[in-house]
Amino acid sequence: MGQPGDEWPLSGGAIGARAPSGPTIGSFPLPALPVDPAPQIPYGEIANPVLESLSILLPALNEEDGVADVLNRIPRLTLQQRGYAYSVHLLDGGSTDQTRAVAKRLGAEVFIQSGNGKGSAFREFVPKIRDQYVVLLDSDGTYPPEVIPDIVGKLGAGSPVVLGSRLRGSINDGAMSMANRIGNRVLSWLASFLFATPISDVCSGMWGFVSDRLKSLGLTATGFELEADLFAECALKGIPITEVPIRYDRRIGEAKLHLHEGVRIALALLKKRIGSGAAAAAKGPRLSFSSLHAEHTER
Image (cartoon, rainbow, N blue to C red; front, side, top):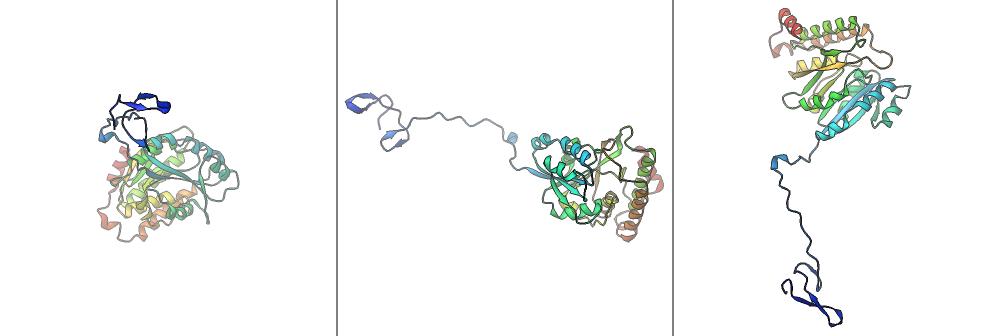
């Protein structure tokens, strides 16, 4: 091959400048194309192409207005920017309004439970989860979807369960009656005492889980006692719960949780504790009345 600048025979006997040597097709040379230099990016700044996965679960029964609000407020861009591949699942309890249609239109996958009750829907769906992390929140607009990335960000080996605490955060005007505030504090104190594990808001409807730890829980709840069941199972198995303060807003739509549910939750806690036998006692010394009082006073 000649060097750049050598002459190359052209058709008709003419001659011209020889193209630079390089790749050819047959006897015809191809032009040498410029090549971008390798980007000078430090190794630690190269993004990890492997996304972590998240399932967002929204239990619902006739919540067409609330579920629209919640789905529209999920911070999708933030989740993507933080490297989470996520899916949203409506756990429908047999809605007779437009809840399912609204959820589908806004990108959620709809699961219709076979039985009745929030706890039953959750227990039926959990075995289907294949993602690494799970966030559970009510679909009535009371819990802030905006904090989902922060809750998931705290999940890991050292924090397998994260609870969004309303009683450590803020409660907007009209969002919770005085009777409900007192009831929530009493139930949280009772749960803390029975299971020797402090918790500030046992009835909170916003939780995050590492999915394999969630699947290890022996849940039995069928209705609104689900959250108490989640706490009790974590306490019995020694799974730590990390609390983060959250904002609690006025619900959208008609209230479904009534005061008599508080009695049902208290009975569920007692039943779970009595049924656990010596399992909970074996994990460590019980908390005293004074230490529990101090714990909740600090919160």
